[in-house]
Length: 121
Image: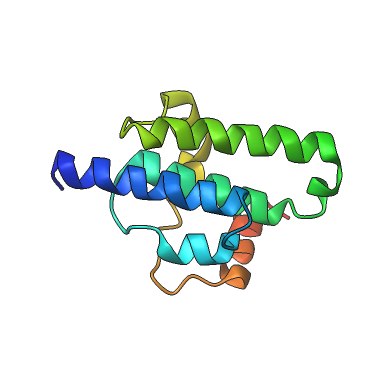
């Protein structure tokens, strides 16, 4: 995949994250719209959103929600510049997407089921 496509996809993902944070779209809608490619930054952003969806109950704590939202804003800002995410973020999520590729027919239930499998719930 060429650099222009990767940058375009990163900016697109940044926009998806912003739209989720602004409640313009649901996380499930955003995840279904993710570009299918091998970019580790995009895959990490995908799983960052999956974690937000899985943390629905934890997000009732306003401090937790704010911290998680700020983290998504940080990810979005980096991707909006077309830059790769820092390696520590990629490493954090790599364990999820190395075993769980992004499929075009992703449903909320499948995402949560795969996430639970990976975090041994």
